[in-house]
Amino acid sequence: MKKKIAVIGSGFGGLAAANRLAAVGHDVHLFDKRDKLGGRAYQYEIDNFKFDGGPTVITAPYIFDEIFQLAGKKREDYFELVPLDPFYRIFDEKGNHFDYRHQLNDMLTEIDKWHPADKKGYVKFVNQTKKLFEKLHPYTDQPFLSFSRMLKIMPDVIRFYGWQATYAFVSRYIKHPFLRRVFSFHPLLIGGNPFNTPALYTLIVQFEKEWGVHYAKGGTGKIVQALGQLLEDIGGTIHLNSEIKEIVIRDKKVTGIKWADDSYEPFDIVVSNGDVSFTYAHLIHKQYRKKWTDNRLNRLRYSNSLVVIYFGTRRRYLDSGLHHHNIIVNSRYKELLRDVFKRVTLPNDFSLYLHMPTITDSTIAPEGHESFYVLSLVPHMDAGVDWDSIGQEYRERVLMFLEDNYLPDLRENIVALHHIDPPHFQNTLNSYKGAAFATQPSLLQSAYFRPHSKSEEFENLYFVGAGTHPGAGVPAVLSSGKIAANLIDQS
Image (cartoon, rainbow, N blue to C red):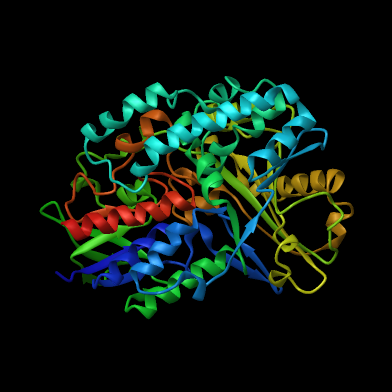
C-alpha cells in the first residue's frame, strides 16, 4: 500500500532509502536543512574549486547499481566511477611510503620492500579476513532487531577472532611495526580506534579486495547529485533549506513533522538520516522517550570528530610523491589515538589523511591548479576545546606541517581555503557531541547492540546512516537505507 514517507536528511543513507522507497511507489519527501544535498557528503564550491566535504573512498559499486536498477535506470547514465590503484599511499614518520594495492602480488611486492618475512603472514591475514567476510557479509544489509540474530553470527565471530581488536588481530600475522599500522588502519575510516575496534570490521578490507576503491568523476558530490536527480526522475520530492524542529508523537506513533514556525505536516512513516542520538535528544520530546533517555544516550561511546581543511593551490604538485588517497602517520600513533578516543583530549601532534583528487580528475579545479583536503583526527566536543579560539591556529599548524614535509611553498600558493571542525559537525551536521561517525564501532555497539534500524519505541520511525546498523562508511550507510526500505515494505 502506498504510504506518505518523510526522509529527514540527505546523506547517503537518506538518499538510498528515499530512492528505494520511491522506486516501489511510495510518496517520498526528502528534507534537508542545507542548501544542497549530501549531509556529510556535501560538496563545497569555492572560487571554481569543488571540494568533497566528507567521504571520498568509494567501494562496492554494486550497492549503487542496485539502487538505480530498482528504479529501472542505469547507474552509468548518471555518474562515472574510476578505479584507483594504489588504493592508498601510506607514509611513515620519515616520509617513506607503502602503496596499498589491489592485487595480491602487488601487495607482496610492496611488503618485500619493507619486511619480506611478513609476506607469508599477509597471505594468512587476507585468508582470515576472507573467512570473516564470507560469514558476515550477508548480514551487512539485514536488520538486527532481535538478539537471536546476533547469536547466529557469534560462533563465527569467535571462531575467526572477529572479537579481537583489529591491531592485535593484524599482529597475529604481521610483525613489522609500520606494516601493522598499514594493515590495521581501516577502523579509522569509520570512526574506530584500531586498538579496540573488533576485527569483524576487517570486512572493509575484503570489500576493497572484492570490488576495488573508486573515485567518482566530478567528486563524491557528483554521486549525491545523481541520487538526487534519480529521486526526482522517479517521482520523489526534495525540500532544501527545510530544517525539521520536531518529530510529532501521539500514542507511541509518529504522526508527522513540525518546522521551526510550528507548521505541521502529517506522514505515515518518518525515516531519520539524522544522527540517531541527535534525533532522539532534539527532535522527540523526552516525555515520550522511555528507552532512549538522555542518560542512555550519554552513556554511549561516541567516535572521534575531525578538523577538515579544504585548500586549492595555483601550483600543481604532481612531483610531490603524493597519490590520490594519502595517509600520514606519526611516531606517537598509538598514544595519539588513545588521546583522541579514550582520554578525549586534543593531542599536540596529528596523524593525517590527505586527499589529492586532481591527480585523477583535473576538472574539479581551475586549469593549472590543484585541489586538496586534509583531515585530522580530533576528539569530540566532550574534550571542551574552544575551537573558536584555536581553530585558525590549528589549521595553520597542519598546513605548515604539509609545507615542511610534502608540499613546498604551500601557503603562498593557496588561493582557496575553508575548514570545518567539531562545532560544525555538532551544529551544522547535527552530530551528537560533534562525533563525525556517530557511535564508535565497538563490539558492544555493533549489530544488535547498535541503535536499531526500526525504533524500539515508535512503530513507524526508522533510522538510516552511520549511527545504526551496519555503521559508518559509504557501503554501510547505503546498506542502512536498504534495510530501512525493506522493513517498511514488510510492515
